[in-house]
Length: 136
Image (tube, rainbow, N blue to C red):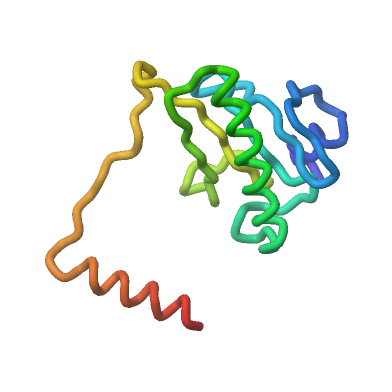
């Protein structure tokens, strides 16, 4: 497998590691939105969050929280974004499950995505359809 994150996990590619345990690794993003931007990855390879087993996802978020608290305190961030891009259309570039921990500052000028509006009656229809899928 040619996954860059797997190579980082194996120690084949250097990384600025900030946390590691038996199942997860956290390291600084080499192209950060802001200083302290961290990637938290499971050591076991899964293409994205949707393919990652539920138990591992639960444990991943516990590690994300631990890392986020340390990042926020270290860089004195005003807030944090957590992001998991799933699929090419969502901006996923490395196809290995990972969560971005992005420190945010009131003055950073980083813009969130634009908001859209639902047409009349559309929100109820979309909610109903999603609800049906959750029952299956």
